[in-house]
Length: 370
Image (tube, rainbow, N blue to C red; front, side, top):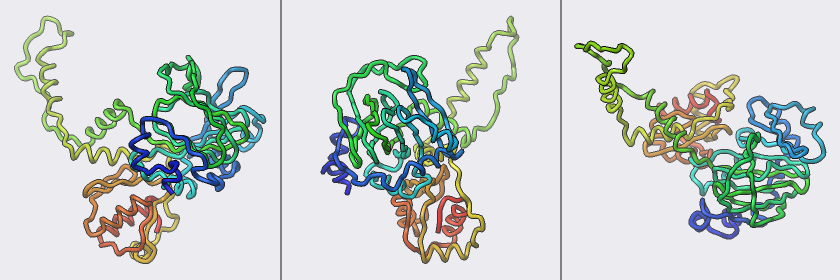
């Protein structure tokens, strides 16, 4: 299946030749792509307050962006041409979307961002732009014209509500149909315009900025630092100017800050928590009437476990990470939990008492289903 998806390339060949290097276009990569997703279902999602959605329109040369949630009336009153609805995180709500993402498991789950689905009326699009992440653009129902270019001029239109390129120099053009796939590495200019009413499924892979990473790591350290003592200044010298910043105080500050240390283990733990942290709008559905621990354990022993659709789960060494939490990975049940993280489901197994209590806590939080 992966080879067909990648145009008869093996996953290793794709990663070597194309990943973060050059585009790949594949005709009929995923036949019947998106047939499970009707326009009205996408509209329903766009009306929810726990879903991130936008409507992009262009009229008389001006771009406009409206943010959801929307009402059904607003969605159905749009003109016949020139607008696009974009819905983020569709895999958190539709099982078929989550299964689609499993097709891309040749990329580490740690890099996966989400599945965005757009519905565009004829002539709809979001303008020529570039993304700062890797993306696979799968065509659902309808058709779209894609133009792409490897340009170095990436200046943006001033004061636009979208990241629209000031100039766009396309080098390749395709009229894509249902099932076609286009992979684009980061910062590759592209523009897609709907030829007919259509849906496009965008599988995005996150590439955190170094500044974002550093800021989040410092927040992580703040919660895990243990530095005793306080800044003392016994023998304080008399200053001619009370408003002058004392050099000796800056020296003490410098010494205190140099005592901040972290280990490689801290980085691993931070990475697992950071990369599984749910997005702000994610809501986990707790069971209305939770079964008992004993009943839950029997269900695991007979039916296995599945991750809830919004759950993100990774592992490293003897640690398991789930939705921003870090837990020890039991050696006795390591294979079952790794399979749960890899495939989002695991068959029946018999957990020990400690593992059963941990899994039960996840079940009560809405992270897993049994």
